[in-house]
Length: 56
Image 1 (cartoon, helix red, strand yellow):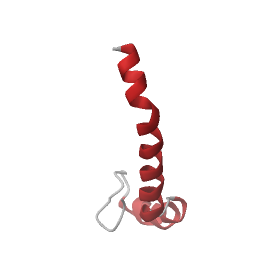
Image 2 (cartoon, helix red, strand yellow):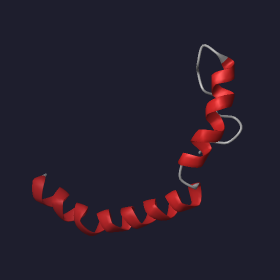
Image 3 (cartoon, helix red, strand yellow):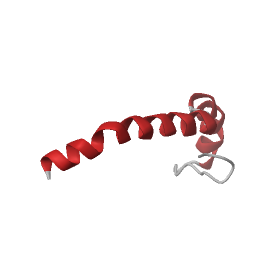
Image 4 (tube, helix red, strand yellow):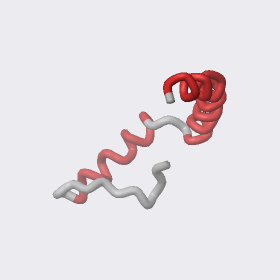
């Protein structure tokens, strides 16, 4: 998720260097995203199997 190897594909290379610090402040922390995804998957696992069984 991000890091020094992500490059913006802009016609002007300077644009990527200008945008990177701003984008880094607005993107979520990968650890927070991992926690969110784990919570979301746990929530979905509670009702998706029943929906799948019901509609297949």
